[in-house]
Image (tube, rainbow, N blue to C red; front, side):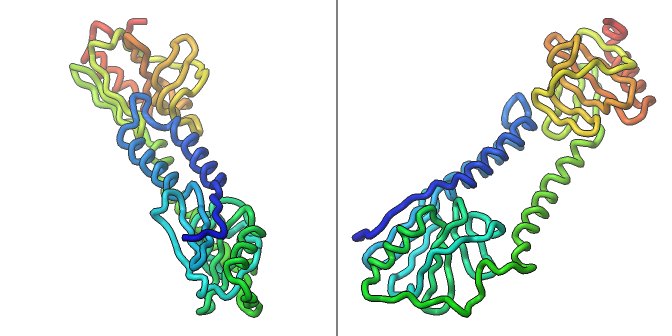
Length: 301
């Protein structure tokens, strides 16, 4: 195809959003590996990166072609189908990616500048670009002698209205539906199972299973040592789940409500686990269960 124009725009907004998501989620993944949660997350991030990291626009002798990323998502407009073109500016709420806006379809990876195409059937299509003047000039060169038809009288894409907020509200709702249950599950008390050969703590993302041979001592504590830092865990409203650095103990795992004493401290050959349950009687019963399972290690400091 003889080209009048070719340009690839990098989707800095999309790349930044993916990086921010990775930074937020990575500390909440298990330290021992990606596991069930991390694997699918990496796949989703990789797919979005491949599909939407760039937008390439080509203007040839017969057609205008668009493709996102590696080219699995692409579109072609015959030049004879294009009756109008002009540089425009998108309002912030139109967003990025492939969007259905009040005025038509938008393909965009970054920024607010775009070129709006008016098609023969009256539809409008916006192409996000960081060089709108160059794209307008390239279309004009590919359509010599053709004066673009004005889009006057059609619904302006920048017109505010209730529908303009629908995409943003849908994104917020989706985040609440995804993150809300995760947050709620993290706030739930851990489930602890004690056996003669060890014990298991069940908690979303941060659960663990420990062998009895790794336990050196167990004790019932009335206070929680000062938490110095969270290394890989969840912390909200005094609920601590996962890996933390604790004063006097070093690096270990916490499954506690910091305001609900007492606490069961399980010292290990490498690290420690501190756990408590919603009611003090439940925590004391857990300690007694461990003391019966491993009587030689109960009460040692």
